[in-house]
Image (cartoon, rainbow, N blue to C red; front, side):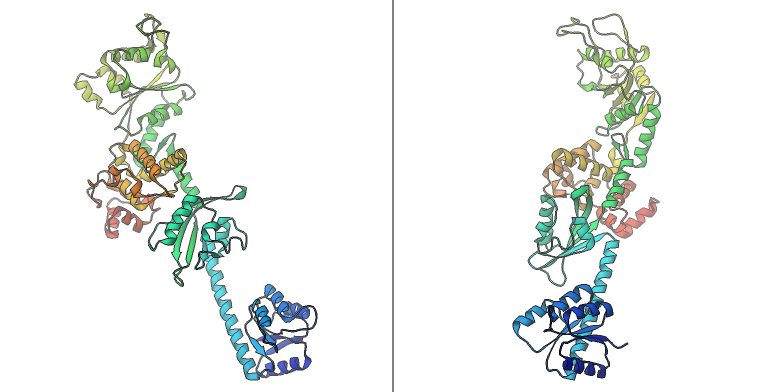
Length: 561
């Protein structure tokens, strides 16, 4: 089909001459009009492929004003016809984005060349815009936003997703310096400055939380790229991970059992044991290394039992003095000994109806062990200075990091008391035996420490994650929690990096970077790496410091899909 041309010319002879030449050249002239107002009306109705527009037209609207109005309504190339090539006219015409000029009087060859260049240029612009729109549509579908700066750092473009994530209207934010345009916290802007001014192409995405008016909140990850067309320009890429974050938070919530955290097989077994013993009113002995969370297990048992609305009293038996242990546990009568200035119920009396947690029961004095055994068997206590026993309704949960059978052999613990307190047993695994729970624990401790200290940190760097997974954790979960709090105090930006970790973890040289000789479960380390990288095997292999071939071989050996 020949291109359709609308002629806007108020000189009849010139209009007829144009029509004749265009038809001779093979173009279709759809109409000839003489005013700007009529040009706007017919252009919108006929949608021609090209406008030949005289600059000076009779009436209130000249050709430049008409072209500006038409270009806001439809995408059509405009070629201006003028006998006036003065600077003022050309300057006004340029504002409308014309596709060429033809000076009167014109020649047929010049007319054809100008029209063909305009049509080709417009087609190229249209195809380029279509490609850009397609790319933006794909990025929008993937919830990826983009923003571009000029050489000076001022914003020149925001995609639809970027505007939504940043809370901007159509042209809002354009022309501003990027650090003024982004509604991010100061710490995030500081981290972005480092990425913008750095020349390292391999860096981690920066996690950001944005709170917008009307309660809208978004979680995103921001990447900064150098514009390949101009090294002084920057492309900001915004990945909307709000839904992923919400799903992860739900999964993390499912990994919580009261104040205990974990989704490994070992921890799920602990949760099942807690539910089982909570339903019966028997004594429980919790075993495990220091820092594994024995008191948290005791509290979970209490909260899961019918005594949950009654007191939970915890006592560290290692802190009980031999002279006052009986008084502190069972109470005393006023005047029973020097310093007994009032009647005291003792810890058993305080915990009446609830649960008494005897931590480090292996350190309790031998003579008090006799009285404790009697209390467990008879459900009564006799306060120091009294002879009449008092009934108590207390559930005993005990814990010790010691090997109590060995303590019995050494004569430091009564065998009958051991049998009495370990009717039910829960053994907590050391952290090195369920390292796959480390990422979940890290996120929980990071959130807690950030809130407590008042410095919001969104993520942990890969090098820091590798250190935390490689470390054997002799102090178990408690040591991990303290290490994260230490690191949060030393972190300036929004990402916790390796250099902020405690020196014994950061500089630990006892573990080689390879996987084979690292303490703990190899399977757990692989699962922890996969969980942190959200299943990305390439990144998991890099995190563990091994080749992909070795990583895939380990997956097969441990039957990990």
